[in-house]
Each structure stands twice: as structure tokens, then as C-alpha cells.
Length: 449
Ligand code: ASP
Image (cartoon, rainbow, N blue to C red):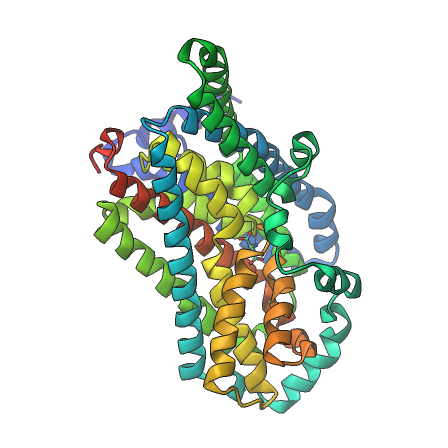
């Protein structure tokens, strides 16, 4: 006991010296801690696959810790959207700013999503990963995953029954209390919060004061709770990664689909690079400052594969690190988490054309333009949860006349690519918040980078 105490005090003392402070866990930046959790989780997962009882142990005792972490994040999403959006909008300097905010935000979302799928289509046409897949692997994959990848009949039927404007109707809740009980109905909660905030802004100040104060402290409490949850993020990420490694398909399959995976990842890296460029050119921030600020959210998105679950972290980072004021971040980020899926859009473009290449389908220019347009719309309609982009990919395939059976080809890589595209999706949301904020030229945003 005494020895441990002395050892701990000495090592803590040493790491307080400037030279070794990087090794001090207490002083280390959050993104490093999460990255260490992520790396150790992967190593631990690999180690456990080597022991006969290892995988079961991870599933029974480690995976639940990851699930708890995700649940804690999801728990915060709806309360924080309500509090921060109502507080942010009711404190706008001028309500006409809401219109400007809306136009700019949606404009950037549309432009970057379109750009993303263009990059994807271009890359997959240049690299041609589908033509390098050998016929034997093709057959094996089709056999292995045919059942798992078959589109859910019930879900497809529901999709077909929906009228063309149903996605717009879905934004308007008929009952706000039931909407707040379902994380998949976040857009409805966002709509209600915007309406509520605008109404609160317009009623006389003396009448609105109690509610403004209520939502202000509600918001502060929510942000504090997110800070608590982030304290366990490195452990949560460790557990998630260990479980992912245990459940991953064999390395051989990864290898066989390597070029397709690399094409997608290369596209996502290019998009993150262009995001930092937009931040530099239109956001008035340096790429390093932006990436350092948003890194913990990217790592959580990577491990959780859900923009919705990551939303509380994205809100916290843009507040504390990127210094985006309340009314901008509370507007841009929840909407972004639900509709701005540029990583997903790129993935859908690349995957649809990859499957066509493997099946030897020659896509004309107009067919590729069709893919670009449907992927843009399908990604907007994708729910911010794990795997949703794979489901809406069916829409892109059927519009382009590519066999849905081809989904079996790419299922093995779905989870890792889901992780990567989710990290990209939330990066785009944060980039938009920074750029929109800079364009509004608020005094609050003039903090030193
Ligand atoms: N998981 C992604 C997200 O939450 C959506 C997708 O499946 O592409 O952003």
C-alpha cells in the first residue's frame, strides 16, 4: 500500500514537470485520453479473440459498458436540443437573424453534401475498385451475406407506401410529448423548439423572463451533465472498440474489399481536408485549432457510429473549444446531426458504383447523375443512427437499377465504414457552425484562436 502510494506520488510528481507532463493522465487533453482508450480497446479486443473464452467475456462484461456510455449520450440529446435551441433562439439579437441563419445553414448543408457525392463518384470512377475484385471472392461474399444483406421487406413496403412529401410531413409533430420520447423524431423536437423559442422572443420581456431564465439554467445544467459523461468517454470508447473487434468479420474479407474500403476512406479524408479549408477560408479559424477542438467528438462518433448520440459532445466542443455562440451552435448542430450526412452521401455514391462495377453494369453519365441526385436525397433522409446509411442505400441502388443483392458484397465492411462516415458527418456539422458564425460576425465569436 505504502509502496503504491509512494510510486504514485513520485510518478505524478515527475509528470508535473514540463518535460513529462504529456504522460500525466490528469493533465492530458481529452482527445488523447479517448484515443488511448480507442487504441487499447482494439488491442484488448484482438488479444481476447486469441483466447477461447475471450469473445464471450467481452460480450458479457465489456460490451455493456459501451452500451451504457452510448445510452448516457443519447439520454442527453433531446433535453439538450430543447434547452439550447429555445435558449439560443429566444436570445437572438434580432429575429430576422433566424431567417439568415436558416438559409445559410441549409445552403451549406446542401452544397457540401452535393460536393461530397461528387468527390465519391469521381474517386470510384478513377480507382475502379469493383474491377479488381476477383470472381472467387465475389461468389464467396454473395454466399456468405446473401441472407443478412437482403433488404427488410417490411421496411421496403413502408418506404414504398410513403408519398413524395411524407418526409416533410414527418417534421411536424402532432404531439410534442410523444415526439420527445423517441430519439428518431429529433427533427420534430427541433421544429417545436424553434417555434417555441421564436414565440418566447416575441412576447413582452417581463412575461418571457421566467421561461428564459428557466431554459438558461436548464441549458447550463445539460452542458454540465455532458461534461460528466465525457469523463467516462475514454472507458466507454475502450469498451465499444473491444466489442467491435470481437464482432468483426475475418481479416481476409477486409483484405478482399480493401480497395473499395480505401476508396471510401480516401474520399472521407479528402472531405475532412476540405472542411478544414472552408474553416480557414470562411470560418476565420486555423485547421489545427478546428481539428483539435472537434477531435473528441470525432472519436466518439467513430466509436458510436451515431451522429445523434454524438450530438451532446459536438455541442459541448463547439461551445468550449470552438467558441461558437449559443444561438448558432444550438441551431446548426441538431439540424446538422439529423440531415447533414455528407460522409454517408459519399459512401452511398461510392458503394452503388462499386456494386455496379462488380456486376459488370456499365453506368451511363445520366445514370451516374441519377446516383448523385438520389444519394443526396437519401443521405438527407438517413437517420443519425448506426447503419442507417446502409438501409437508405437501397433507394439509390433501386433507382439506378443496380441489383440489391449486391449489398451482400459490401456488408462485411459496413461497420468500419459506418464509423468513418459518422466521424465525417459530425465534422461537417461543426464546420458549418464555425462558418455560419463567422459570416454573422457576432461580437461573441471574436475570441482569439
Ligand atoms: N451512422 C451515420 C450517422 O449517424 C448514418 C449512416 O449510417 O450513414 O451519421
